[in-house]
Image (cartoon, rainbow, N blue to C red; front, top):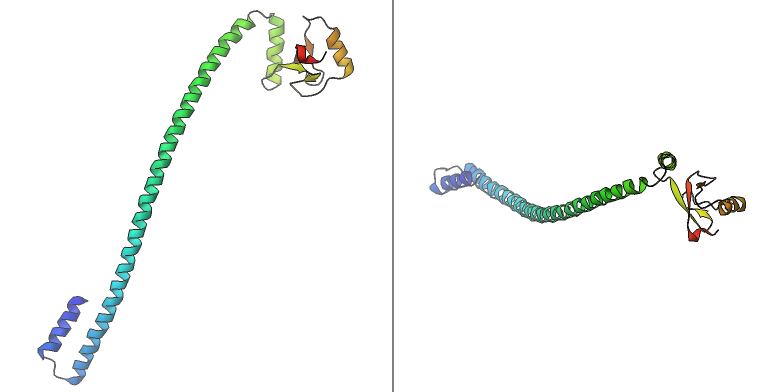
Length: 173
């Protein structure tokens, strides 16, 4: 556009165009080209401003992504450490269980394992203040009397959930 305007201005200044009508058309074309060039420059400036804003936003977002990646890495490391700790605890408890299970009669252990499988992992529950900690139901007086009168080495079960009841001093007997 600039080249065309410069060429037209050169033609106008050179005097090669002698017709007044052609001169007037050439002046209008030069003015039109100047307006169009100004409009295009405004558009270019606006695009450059938008590009600069977009680059600033991209820089900001890149920083946020890096910050989040750092937090993710930190959380992943903490998770992995917790998983390792849990795995170690599982191994320790499994060993302890094996030792304790060796001291329990086989038929009682078989009953416990069967109940544990049926009851979602909990085969025995504490009897606490006349309430089964497995199903959270309070035992009826007749059930409490049966538990109270049963010998200490007798296996008693909750009438509601059928789990093995573990009697403690807080049982409320």
